[in-house]
Image (spheres, helix red, strand yellow):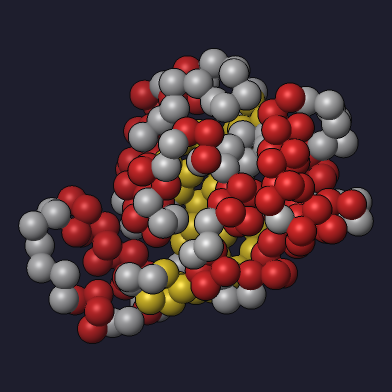
Length: 200
């Protein structure tokens, strides 16, 4: 569930050490993952893999939140308001570019998306920046239905380029119940898959 190296070539062993993965795995009822400076997804728990369109099955160089937003055709249905989310993601990436605009990993992401997505190219050229550490969003999973999620971002102490993101839901809500059921399926993969569809 962790990459031995991040796509920028930096050793990610500091991130994938047992303590970090153990923390992620113990968040059994909340999708949680760690992203790098340019939103490469570096580590995740099983629930995040299930809710985030099977990120564990992607090749490492494709496992980037911004890239997925613009290149995965499922994403436009995945987000209730894809355009607002995509614009915000571009502004967040633009903010990260302030410190080192010539970083090779940043250049690779921006170059690929500028060629493949006219919308990314237009919004990147607008030079809007943003910083966001919490929020609420609705996602529409193709198999599991709608989730209304509160999300929070926590910068890792001592690792300023790594951020822990946790998705949570109001206790007793439909989303909280779906997270609980999905988590139970992950722990017991032979369990019948009827309960979640009944709660969709």
